[in-house]
Image (cartoon, rainbow, N blue to C red; front, side, top):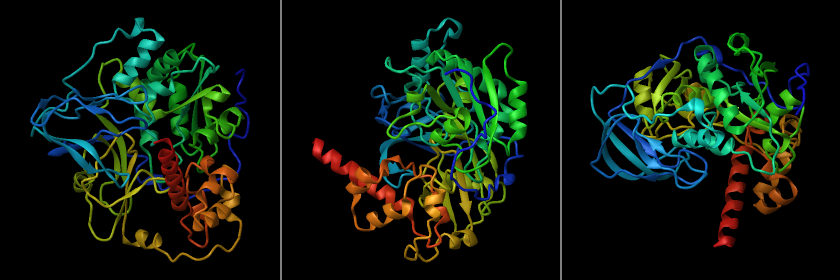
Length: 450
């Protein structure tokens, strides 16, 4: 890919500047929450085929033990986040608003939080294929929210030439600071993880992109770059959605991913800092993924912060631990721009849960304003980072012209960042309309293929 233009503007066109609200938690060190009395572990915590349960009701498991296996290449296993007994395997609520087959685990009270099941690796002598298999075996997925299996991402097709690893440390979603704290507190894990991923994908260059409102993280990571390594840390403009793959590649490399293509097509692999840091921490220990760092924040709680939370922990338990005050609140798993709202307090923290945002009554009322007709102001066109026409797409959605939206108006290039909805003076739920359209189109394709 040659020399990167690190002296470019470090930005992309369009986007928005919502209030970051990160000061609530960005200076708070990562702490660990206790285990709840039960865990709910959906088998679909990643993009691709859900995992297959390999335990039965009544079976005892120890922390770290595999309880579900990968069902194919684009799939990952699941490990027990705590020692306990399998209570049930049945459909349970998920953040997507649907019920999905889940392993319900009763946690043994007072059990240690140390991992008791490990797989020993001779990492120094492992080849690229062996490293990729180990990454799959640990159940690793993208922790930025998409939850794409990490081993699949670093498996480079034979027809692609890829040499650059881009590590996404932007964390552009308002309120969230778990990636920021990870960079500050676990820089050694991150650097170690970068070396593993570069070996697994056989890459030669690594670039860490961080928004310039986190300069302490930029400086911290520059101090920890291993001598002789080809790793660079670059500050980019603070703007939403800077952390999107395509936006970050434009900011860092000055290259655009063509419509319908992926970062591999321009010679790059993109991974979140939390993902790479977890690989650097867990792989040498031979441990599976059993927990993650989650930002728990918002005006509706007393003890906002960044917490290590076992996977499967119901959000109701988290709320009890952080001083939830009750009342009319909105619970968002993730950030306010792209995270789904949830209402069931049994909804669990999963691998893709980067945040739990609790908005109090005043904030909720802001989100329930009246919807007005489109006034053709063009603000959504100026905000869309993909240079689409959200206004036109919204009108087509209202007429249920879903196929036309995809065929002639590039609906599938929309990654649902929410910029259009954020700036719309008529409060039109554009992103929600686009999600409905995409879901309908997927259903029609599935019906045709039956």
